[in-house]
Length: 210
Length: 210
DNA sequence: GTCTATATCAAGATAGAC
DNA sequence: GTCTATCTTGATATAGAC
Image 1: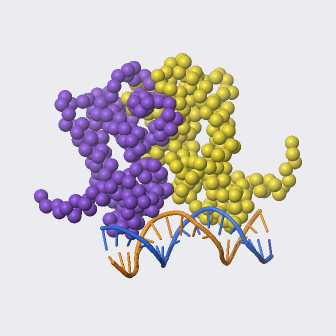
Image 2: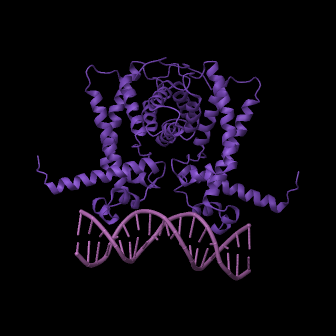
Image 3: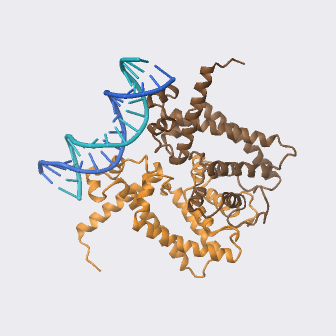
């Protein structure tokens, strides 16, 4: 275990603060509309100083995406270690619930839509891809198990289920509902879980918790 | 009925071509990444000429959004006139199917995400708002009817159902599946309809068509 | 590693001739 | 209304002093 000097700790704390600002701004405005000037102002340092820590705007965003994936992996691995072990579908529901809570907290960066320049940068970032694949692997296993026991529709290819979970993690519906201001966070979460897992028709569980 | 001169017809045709290019570019890259230079190049005229037809980039995008909403209204009104009349849930499923087909054709502009400058412009555009409200009204009625007969989950507030339909119309899942290239357009549509209406759990209709 | 000041460039919009 | 050429701005990124 390497010794970490006080100076290094200060630097790490600063980088953590930078990534937090980036993450919030990504959630708020998206990559294209987020400016490096804003990030610097939000952190409270000069723009040139930012560039000493991160070499580009893309690197800033990638760091935020990587930290989020690390948090997701941590949550998912926590689920895997629970006793008694929740059923596969329950684990999937808890993951979805977690993503909704992150969204409600204003900490879910909007997906690098379509041809964003960020998309290409992420697709070439091994650290990002590594985490994305780890997460997909775990979720993919759970999906397969849930389809085997019938709690997830076996007629859907697993890809669709996985992509849907990722897509719901930054679904605009949540923000529209929240902006309306007419429903509690808990109500929003329950309704989104219902539409995601039981559909608009909703012939699934008539009541219950995730 | 005013007489439309030949010259005016040519102008209208050109504007139609412009809007078509904008629509495709919006679908491909989104508002922020679409440049006016690209639009001009795609249409085959000079940028300054574009500005004789549309006063700003926002006006260009708004025109495309309005035309799309008009097409949606036309489709929806066609459904309302069918004999025999489809059930409310079937009408909703057909609308969703239509939005998937538009996406597959590469003609669905990505929603003005979050704080896009376009969002503010659209929110201040009466022509756009008028169409959006007309569409929402029709769909809202069908949703209420479908909830009354139990074919849409009555425990969901109608807002959630409406927002979900709009959100699925530009859901990234479809493009991810299409980019994968492993499934036919028909398979993609059927799976997306299933996840949207019957959920990932899929306890709804075990087979059938929309 | 932090700052101020600046280089550089891409993109929205316009001038002015035809 | 179409064009070429240009203006202007805002944003990424860097120079260079401390």
